[in-house]
Image (cartoon, rainbow, N blue to C red; front, side, top):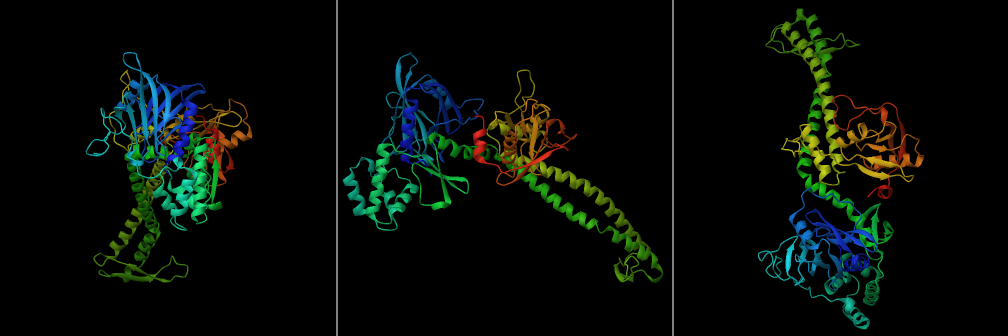
Length: 579
């Protein structure tokens, strides 16, 4: 669900408790829509995420590591200029609004203490992050809104900031109990339409919560009044429950109270804080979105190359089946040769006994009437030789194209594991090196050499404390397996499917069974079999894994191995990840 005003209220309470008085040490802008403030507080160091992403705007504490661009955007530079070293004084939220105002005490260019503010508006496609000076004027914003876009409420540097225009709906938390109960009991419809009435009447309620209140009300206005009053008490007393809704193991929604309307089909998982909930809920989605947006050009190129190769293989397989009939051509040539005595020029069909048939049945052999019997026999022999040669060439080409198809499928699989620009750049570099993308001018080092991009593999820690490394692309798989690992480490890979190379660092000693199982689960999760059960994963020492000369990136061979069967678990993957 979109972040509603009630969840925003709960988040505001969490943030006040954790970061009020905190000092801003660092500021980063990982994407166009996200800003991360590294802060020192009395309870330790934390990272405050302010996201104005239209699909999922929010403010929260985060533990997810985000990759930052090499050159910070201009908006990030302005934030650093005005807010680095600043101390949070308070966090304000207009009642039942999806808006948070962070007020800071900072130093001016002259060294005087001044107040500034950051306003995060979480209102769908109009979401924005706005910098204000002490007088309430706009210094700048993540998205500038001029008069042509909104004459009613422009957001431009130099203008005084105004809160969004009120919707005209009622704030039920500001109403008295009797007044609120009377309103709902007298005006809410009976039966269907209660959720729509709630949405049209009160501010801050999301469609999910409106449906839940209507579901619990048993289709009576008195029941609905009871549920609205209960919701009012939850908000006023701050008794929120961060809950994630899961269907068939996959996260589908979240809320601040248990959602019962879906019945037993939907599992409820409670989290300690809303920040933890949002980290878990959005981390994978946002990573996929970033990959989709930033890697769209070469994803399209790889997909097109993959489809061309698959079509080529289909055509070659059809040609190979036709070439498989070459023995019949030789037999026809032999039969024609033994029947020259009864043939004549201009004949279009030869009906003769087929002595290659165990039963010696007659066969009809098509002839070219413009050729002599000798020339027809020669033509069948020539076609036989041609088909024989074609079969040899097709077998070679098919093996080459099938290898290429496997490689392109593996690239598409690995793109899904990318977590930032550096991972995507490494894949782009790999595709250029292998001729799938055009070469473009690369960045150079200070010594004039081509700058090689090396992203880091994903790092996990087993329950016993052993390090597990997981490659995120083919080049990284090669480097991880063939260069960076000790020969005594253990290597894992899902059997006969595309997936990451996984290395369990053993330090030269026999690892415990639990660590081996967990490494195998990671190999299964980061593969095409992530949604399967009892996935076969091959395990072998790194020293026996070899790369054939001239093989594509990521392709290795091994002969000695054991196979373990595991069912990957998302919760375990999250638990073992080193953040």
